[in-house]
Image: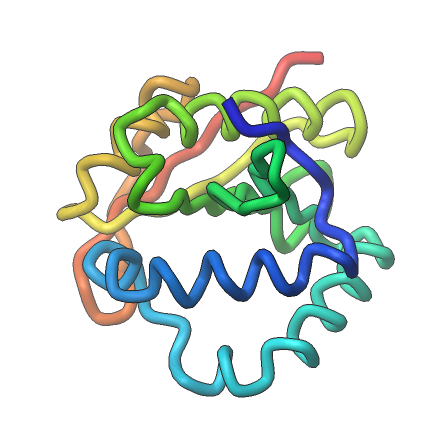
Length: 161
């Protein structure tokens, strides 16, 4: 199982490889990042690190022993003891428990390291895999939403310290 690591500057190359290799796979179930994301990746990576340093977000990678990225689990829009959880795993990792393990670990970090008390998440209705990960990791569906013009669902999880 890959190790969870907090995003660092030296992750840039492996993260870009992960995003490029899985772009089409991701676009089938989550909004596409767009060409601009890839064209300005280094600038965006630096901005993420700045947001993390300011405590606005907490970004995590699932990394194997060779340094390859298997997935991401992020906490964004941190405010008032809450944050929005987002995650994605490589196509090669799908169905292997990688996403569930990563989300569970980040939920633990959310309490122990970041002092959060609740998390929100969203998933497209058609993304059965993400919905299953959220259910397995203690999230409860609380409503509907729209994601990139497609029907989605909203979830919450109250965290216990």
